[in-house]
Length: 272
Image 1: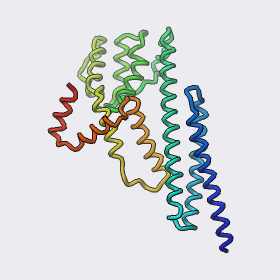
Image 2: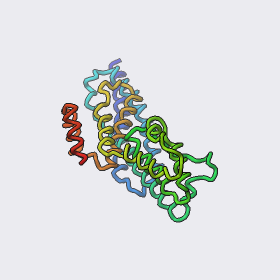
Image 3: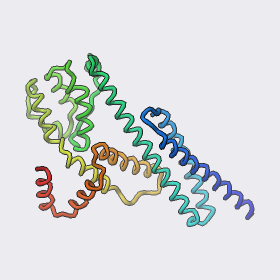
Image 4: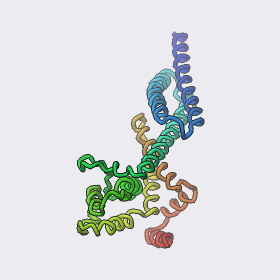
């Protein structure tokens, strides 16, 4: 019986080592990744690694059930930390690659083909929406500018119609008192940019989300991926703005220790 148990443990550990080696190979592939590498291939490799991680969880659960859990803690932490790292790195590369691809597509339309971004059939138009969440403004503004604002084939009357159709919630209320005349388009866009294009608020919202993430993470793969995706989305946004720096984070942490009056005065001074 002891021999059978020993052999089973040896087999489980060997399978765990196979997954660990897979992570190592994936990490090396990321090190060799370049701008010309295939995004689709990278996405496929991520899917394979995620599937393997599911199998690894089952292996680890069997090991925990058969052996003293403390014997495997260091190995488990090492594997799962490495897995989290390569998943985060790969998804960041994908996001950066998709942004680069999107910018290239917009650039290619500037030589006379930009009108194709807005189909003639208005029912086919796919425009971004904005509800008034500050951290969503940069992405919305970039997409709207590329599709509508900078499209020389459109009149201001059309631009205003499209802009109003994109706004919901608090953002829609911000400009609801303005008329629909073509001359109001520039005013409407200026109001929105002035209200929501505030870098300090956007940066703080991302940092609020990061430092406000729940500490009580449940021992669940789905919860872990959700947690990882949330952290990644905010760190990528900060990195894209060039604000994933020690100074930015330190200033944020210091501001959270201030009373509300001092913090308000400090922010007013910082904006001047």
